[in-house]
Amino acid sequence: MIAGSAPCCLQLTDSVPGFFVRRGHGGLRCTGRTSIVKERIRGDPGLTAVADANRRWQAMIRSGAFPSGSDRHRLILGAPEAAFLRRFGALSGAVTQWSLPLWPDLRFETIAVPGGPVLQEWLVRPDPATRPDLGAVADARPWSCVIADLDHAFGPVRHADGDTSSRWSIVLTAAGGRGVPRCHLARFAWGLLQAVTLL
Image (cartoon, rainbow, N blue to C red):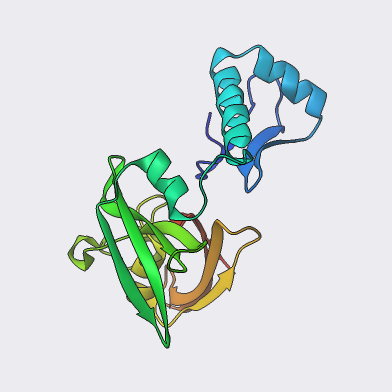
């Protein structure tokens, strides 16, 4: 089952309560007693398939033949929907966007040094008209918002890097249940909202 709202955490609650398999920056890793978790994975065809897919993915991205930069995303995601240059002050970044069936209003976007490495990869909303109506923090549901949605609704906000390159967080101030302004922490994975907690 999915633990919490994060799409990258499988909780093995059937027979191993409290142990998790997490998909982090380096792939799947076990927290808790690794031998118990591995035994549980071996006994579940679904989890075995996930572990096998992860093993193949890790071998592929570590292969010397695997392309670098945005080419690796083209290999996995196919031809992009859009590719263009975007100015960041005095610098230009090569922006590439792919549509995803799971989130038709969003695009998976990479920003790279032209002809070089990818600096940023996340989900974005290209059309502001599709933004969710965020009248209150409670309206910001996991998996329904990207960073710019909360920035627009509750700005100005304070941005902070997460513990890995795929994580991001923002601190925002918004009215609570009684209309009193309160500080909240919104956490994102790959630019997609995972949780909002009261500070």
